[in-house]
Image (cartoon, rainbow, N blue to C red; front, side):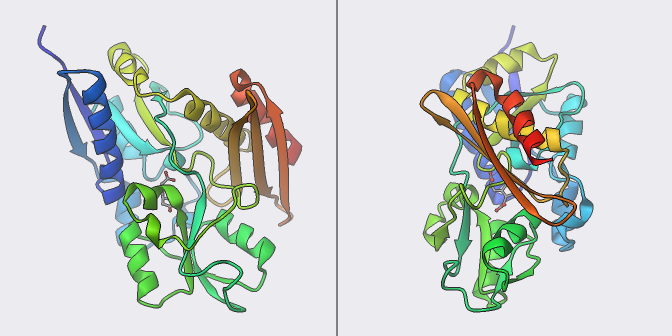
Amino acid sequence: MPNPKLIIGTRGSALALTQTNTIADALRRVHLGLEVEIRTINTRGDATQAANVPLASFGEKGIFAKELETALLDGEIDLAVHSMKDLAHTMPPGLVLAAVPKREDPRDALIGSTLDSLRQGALVGTGSVRRRALFSSRRPDLRFLEIRGNIDTRLKKLEDGGYDAICLAAAGLKRLGLADRVTEYLDPEWFVPDPGQGALALQTRESDVQVRGLLSAVNDMASFVTTRAERGFLRAVGGSCQTPVGAHARHIDGGLMLRAMLVGDDGLMRRAEAGGAPGMAEELGARVAKMLR
Ligand SMILES: NCc1[nH]cc(CCC(=O)O)c1CC(=O)O
């Protein structure tokens, strides 16, 4: 039998392509002779980005993922590489999260100014309801403006003077070699990141035992477990794009700690933290969700 070719689907942004190339290289390295092809697929998220439609107005996650998931189910691609936080909290039937490679920095970053040196009433570029709520909890004077586009587009908009600062995931900047643009890393204990932020999700067909086997070689168990707890929380609260939710898990002394925040219907921000066994990550997420509802 000839060597099978693995077709990887990805979005076409610089960040998505960088991430996908890293995964393709890792797979070629661990599976010598594996033939890999990268196929770029445009998503609805990309299309609305070009039109500068506010992302939060969609009220759904998965707008950057759906077309890749369809391509998987249609057999057009064998593996989809996503930013984990772009995935809806529940997988479509027939698809699985096969592996989570070693996670990048999960923190949020402020670019252009530190939080404390922002002037009274400063304008911060972010469309994220989570980021807006967290900033406001410490600096109620701040004002916010939607900012969309790829990372370099957003940095350009900051340079052009449209904002006093912008907030981005540290992971994207680091992966693109732009870490020097970060003015302040926001402490995840306080500024709780998006569930799964900084992690990649390798998604495939549930029935594709061969591809699942190939992917297990690039799985990082610690990253798999922390993101499982965070997404378990997300699933349990049923978060949409309009509900500000954050979750950040880490391993401490062989155990798993999960910190989470959410803004309730009453507009109040609640925070909770609990620990559990790494083998019960999903349940830990559900438990922390219960504490917040
Ligand atoms: N919302 C879009 C998105 N999806 C993943 C990342 C960054 C990389 C990551 O978190 O893995 C970003 C940009 C951002 O929030 O700054």
